Image (cartoon, rainbow, N blue to C red; front, side, top):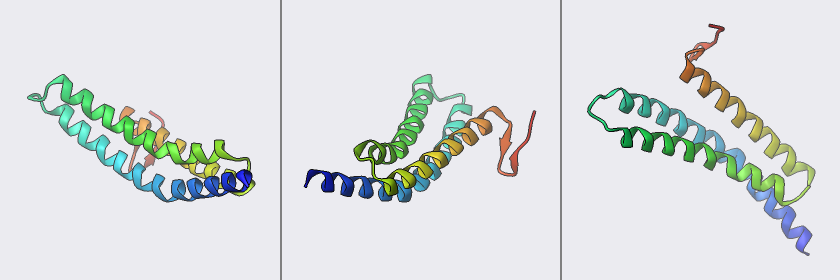
Length: 113
């Protein structure tokens, strides 16, 4: 009976992860732009800048939690595939966000410097 419950938990977290991860990635992108605007304002202290970076990292980790729980809760094939696709999308989004921060990527795509 515990194995069946564990499979159910894996399915629940994989479905929650595939639904919430894109939404959280959108909020993370918005927070990146907000952090850039706050960071460009000379009247803001370093504490405020660091606080916005911490918020962005927390949103990124929140988007990562559900797929990881689905992967580590049970080795059922369906939840692993769904969580793997979600994690791959999360990783691509993080690389894109880093590329945007460095200046290699934009909304039109990524181009070598």
